[in-house]
Image (cartoon, rainbow, N blue to C red; front, side, top):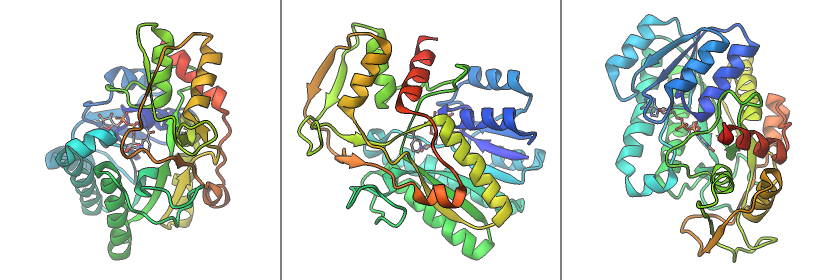
Length: 326
Ligand SMILES: NC(=O)c1ccc[n+]([C@@H]2O[C@H](COP(=O)([O-])OP(=O)(O)OC[C@H]3O[C@@H](n4cnc5c(N)ncnc54)[C@H](O)[C@@H]3O)[C@@H](O)[C@H]2O)c1
């Protein structure tokens, strides 16, 4: 049985959906529902029945009951707080939830002899890019508490492999976007800090002004460049990672991105074209801590995981807009 922590959230639910539809593996989702949605769990259960446990990684009893009650053999660990700005203002929350929560989970895995985990890491582990596209050997100097919790968790995973033979695949996602192409589940964060849903929210509501931060970067149109990876493509990367773990039983890390960078203005224009709406925009100065360009070198995932992103930016924005309208 596969344990999915954080499976009521945006990304975890898309991976759960793929496993429910395309495999016969049993799954159990564990989520405290602080940022996840019970409605998402209900939608997933209408696809194929599975177990859901409401619980918190910070609570040892919740974890002990989980591992006692279910015959878990591998874990996909999404549960975390994800807001970079909040992590700078309230690092305590991030170290307690993301780092202590992850340590609790890993220790419970060891107690119950579960030795395989796919871990949601992030491009934020790299910090300010020294070169682009960023490969997995790029220096790791995270510049905010969110990125540091993920970096530290990766280091712990290395130590747990050396000492206890616990094998992990760390997937370092770049900017994840889009939703289920059948529009059953999608991205619903509160507050929403991600670019595409924010532009689309402004398209859907003429009172809602889109705030663009920084037009003086040394990029082709002055706005920041990011690498937007489709959430269904990301789900495929997790399936490949699970397969790699079970076949090779080796730890590794992979960038999950498209290798295509898009500027904020390009995303804005594509959203305008797809929604056929005028979108009100306010130009603001740069925000602190926003690197000019973050683009993945994804050759390693292509070669070793045999993974390749398939969706276009248009596909991604269309599904995100369909979900927002629903
Ligand atoms: N969204 C992105 O673009 C992106 C990029 C890089 C990495 N990631 C990583 O992917 C993972 C999933 O991100 P998301 O966008 O789906 O976030 P999300 O907030 O939608 O989902 C996270 C889920 O984890 C649950 N959770 C949080 N802390 C918990 C705890 N202590 N115990 C139990 N459940 C808990 C929340 O209730 C939520 O359902 C995170 O680890 C995040 O750091 C996301």
